[in-house]
Length: 275
Image (cartoon, rainbow, N blue to C red; front, side, top):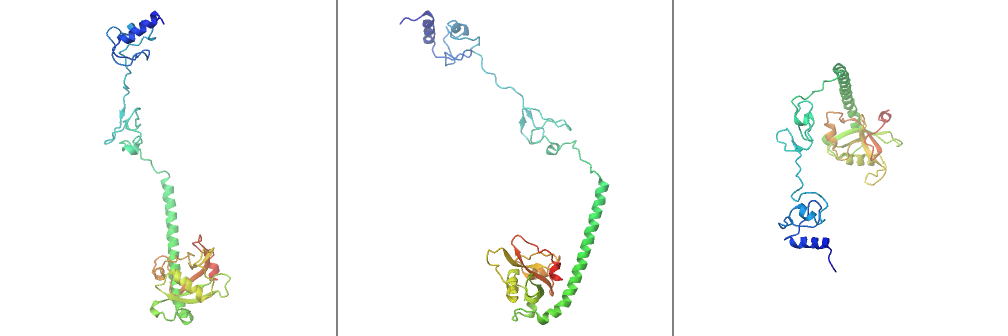
């Protein structure tokens, strides 16, 4: 098969070159950086219709010369392509430190408190109410303590409990039983060192109440505070509640026994038990 003048010229060109080279203009023909001295110019190989562009062989992609902007905060080496200028101090910062508090801006604006007089007045009202409530609580606690001392003398005469307990270890309560029980209340005494859970089981036994506290039932017997209605945690010791400064239990005072679900931590309508 005869070669045409064009194909022959191209073949001669490729064999004449020491190494193949890819032209940056047409992205073809050659693979190496060098051409032979005869065909090294763009016009020499474009003459044979091998390159369709006017690119120069020595042309290379220019490196990215975009400037970056360093963060002005001391100790931060971050840089950003776009300048982020603080409107107050007019310094450049990175994304992390662009807000005034983050770069300790020297011109940081401190917001002024609004309606300071109204806030002061409201605080005074709240403080007075809090003081009034605390005063009433102290008076109520004092009266409850006095009433418990008077009731203690009567409870010691007919309270039920473990007779083997020494008198110094006993703690007396007027126990108000669950609603619907045959008896409304029953005087009992427990050991100071017992847990609330053990005292609950002992009270249920003395009052002949159904006690399923060791089973996964819907409701369990709980001893509750007669003032706050709080269900006493079963693992707490009774003596720690006697020694509490805020809303304690009193030796000779009242306590409520009622069935509560696991979600209920407070007894509702406490006064209805004491009526």
